[in-house]
Image (cartoon, rainbow, N blue to C red; front, side, top):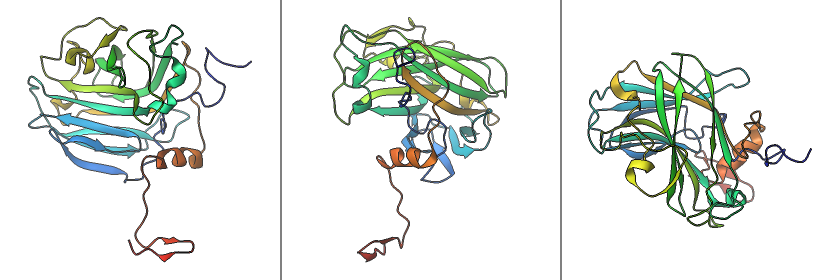
Length: 273
């Protein structure tokens, strides 16, 4: 056995910190307002809030998790935005580095399918929007998933059709693939679109929303949990690739390293910073 669904037996998961085990910046991020732009939270995951004039959320590393996991990312609405107007939107974002996505073959005749799997829980049931964006080619694919039961961990699998046109992924440290979990949107974005089709940039396809999207900010009772995020080559969702804590931390430190004040570096003495 040399592969599973076209993907390797190891290093299958292209998402760093998908089990939400690493949070170097802290365990809780409070008072994230509706017009704060990008706010980094748990390592490799950020929340983007744009133009919302009321909504406030807290993002935290939480101990609620499905079997086989210890941590999750939790978004809790702390100030409601009952009416989401045009151009207002929010999403949870994972940005994958282009170096890690060149093997998919985007933009070529040999492009491969990719499969995203994750565990999700919310008190809000219904259909949610999710979007995949290829930064170098500026192309996106809109999908949805359904939370069936309130306050229950559910496993979701989404396989994307091959994208054989529109240009490839640059072999550099730019945007390889972005995953956007939609949280709320204004009416100008909340329209139905064809699903699992790659499109050139259009704001109505780029933002991960359609007419069925759920507004996470409709009540301060609302929450959203995510863990076990895995993105892999092929049309098969394999078991989550657990990496040991040291390996996952090192991967996160490529993008952010927390150095406590007073750290002593070998041969340099006390840095004092």
